[in-house]
Image (cartoon, rainbow, N blue to C red):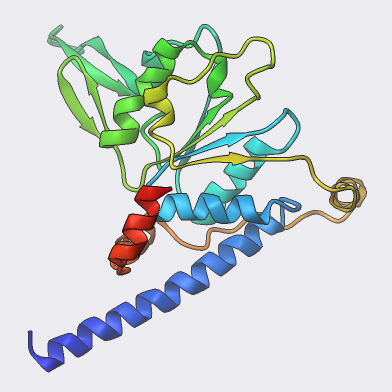
Length: 248
């Protein structure tokens, strides 16, 4: 590579880094406009997305888990779908299924794949531990391979694909422990705690004031986030840091 090509590559990287810093800062601001507190949680969710992982959020009911995920997805400019996990949820309710359709006029019948809600950028698996392990396992391939296989046909998911699963503490009635294989798919298990007294007051003030909160605006998009993910992978990691991580 000649000097001119190196300079062009360097300039492009600097521009992308600048955009990365700007976008992540704006995303945090947008989330703070709706969510009170939980700054560390938001940072962990952004880290998870940027390294291509998935995140499990554990918290008691009423800690704004669902609102947080929806707000973040909007600020990221990504498509968002939510699955409410219940005891009677079936695997095909997540992945989609093949259905026989009859062509009008000819009467010819053929199989057509109907995509499930997993075909999105940000998937909120709400209260994932209220569904038996068999249904939870429907997410394993999607989270690891970014694909869904139905009747032997492989269907690729859009990039980026980011699962944010919420769960209630296991001691609550009607919950199932997540299988080890499922837990292994999550990069972080983030604890969403109750707010402090001062933060609770801020929440009350927001809901009792007559001033409307501004809508959440998209600060980036799917294509740019994929570029950010590639940028993060270019960060050099020393052997000492690798060994430290292994020894934890």
